[in-house]
Amino acid sequence: MRQGGIDARVVALYSWPKYLPELALRRSLDLIATLYEEIDESPSSVLCTTYDDIKKTKEEGQVAFIIGMEGAEPLGSDIQLLHIFYTLGVRVLGLTHSLRTYHADGAFLSPRRTGQVGGLTYDGLNFLEQAQAMGILIDVSHLNDPSCWDVLKFTKAPIIASHSNCRVLLDIQGISPMTRLEL
Image (tube, rainbow, N blue to C red; front, side):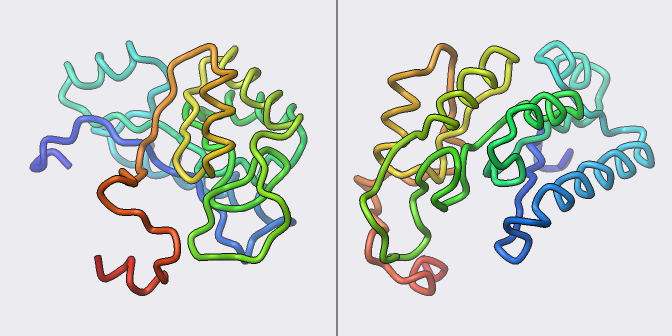
């Protein structure tokens, strides 16, 4: 990371489909525990939860790590879990990872047969508002269009699109996953 000039990195908590829904919470807690162990073993790495932490880490020649949740699937509809993950260091939240969840509809990675596509749910709007009130940055990557527009409509704080493509350059709707990997 240093050779590449990377001073800070978001470490994504992601629950593979095989962990959904029952084991997603456990898997996310295990990933955070592993990150804590790795940071403890590496004096040049720091878990950062504020902008000032990141600035200080850079000034001291260390590498900043920020915990992001790539999909709120581990939280289910339990908003209290959002508070727990905030306490553990989560500062970036994607409401879904390309799935239809308690929170929102995602942009599926490959075409799927579904009912009517929707945006943020009642729970999703509550999670958005709570997360932003706590200082968690919302990431719209992996949301479908209606969900993304809902976030833009209801947001009260800055948001990011950390790893989304520009549809004008590449519209992946209808492209098979294998073709996307080759691109």
